[in-house]
Length: 464
Image 1 (cartoon, rainbow, N blue to C red):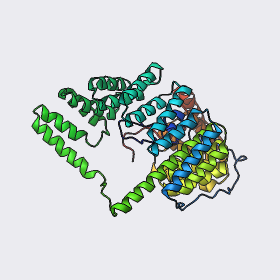
Image 2: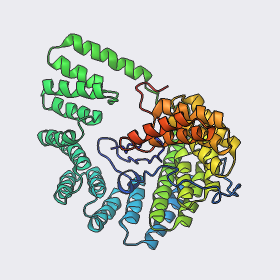
Image 3: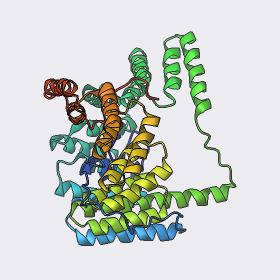
Image 4: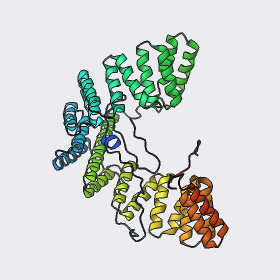
């Protein structure tokens, strides 16, 4: 149930408090669906101040499990007091109760969310997961059937239904639910694996073998897919194949990171509990900030984002959310501070170098913009948008020969209407009328065939 985001987009986390395949789903991945490009609103030089007073934390503030949990509860309570009838606010509180292992209260809150937003599948899925965790499997099934009857988008509902039915031993029904998922998403390796497991329990070994092989072929399948496939083959008397799959399973296991604690048991538990409390607090702050943003209170959202960074300064997800907030407010200088911190943390992140280049261009900082575009090209020579950006930058400063070379390189990797028109303008200014005419003709022919040149990189099968 992961939300797929294309390049140049803010990524969002899915909080899974119960293990797959039974999921508790957070709002930011399923409900809010925020996926605007980081620089969808391009700054102009007159809008962008040269400097910012924003200072981002570098060292994490030390805290305790109790303080982190108390802070998370305070944030959730304040949000709910501000928006008492908002299902998004109720959801934040429900997620917190799940993190605190208070499943009954979480289920109650999600049932209230269902009343307020009866076609939102996430709430049914989460309520069913909470019910199942309390041993109320039949109630979970009934909740998921209600979701289908209400017309919710069915894919996640069927996946959760299959998980619940599996745990209740209603395997034939679980297979039917998974077939509904795979009818809609036939390339889901996770669901093919889940189907193969379920078919194996029904002793439908040939079908299970086909499903598991499909999961492995699609990849990435769960690590134990080879182990299950080996057992399925052995049950059919295919002992040589079973031995080969066991060998492959051992090979996968050998590359899995060790989960053995390297510190004494008590210290390891304390660190684990503290880490879990921090995760719960950060999730609560994130979800609450999202609700405030959607409700038109960016100041409170910013305060919560900055508080999250005080607890986890190197968290790139939080930084990207803060950067998106500043861009939505057209606070370009503050956005630049965030992008520069992201580059410090991820020096080879092409997207952030592109973001820095555009912000620097808008502030008139041509050397920084040029260096950022060049860094992208160093990392990815076929990055057409970086060549295009350099061509624009050189044209602005009347470095026409360099501008033409950059524009030609952009069109070599990914010819687009805008990049061809830019090349035509450069050639026109250089007095090369035949080349300008040829570029305009190519732009005219391509205008109806392709989108804006701001697609980051051309498709390639084996990226460096």
